[in-house]
Amino acid sequence: MTIGLTHYLVLAAVLFGIGSLGVMVRRNAIVVFMCIELMLNAVNLTFIAFSRFRGEMNGHVIAFFVMAVAAAEAAVGLAIILNLFRTRKSLNVDEANLMRH
Image 1: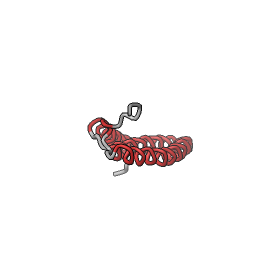
Image 2 (image 1 turned 90 degrees about the horizontal axis):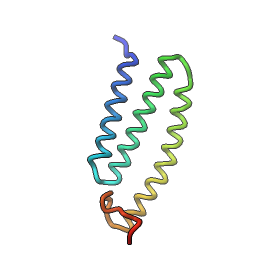
Image 3 (image 1 turned 180 degrees about the vertical axis):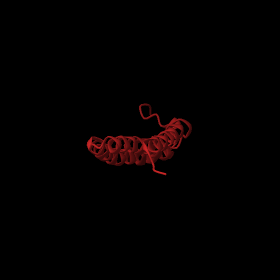
Image 4 (image 1 turned 45 degrees about the horizontal axis):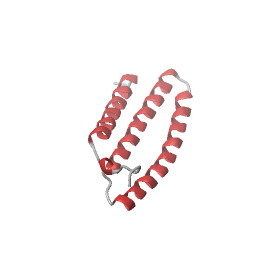
């Protein structure tokens, strides 16, 4: 039994679904942040699967750029979450209205 394109796409869809469900349901900023990263990894898996299926390197290159953007987003996002915790003493995204003091 070989693992085909469908298996990779189903796995990526399940990962993306778990990530999107976590973003919609959870209120902790760190958990929401991790779910967004999970969604980015699901998209990377899709890019790599299609790239491997077609025998090209385009998907690998795009996945590399997505990982680079995700690393920058992780640094900035964690800094924002840390600042939010220092000022509000909470990581609940419902309480994080930074425009009002």
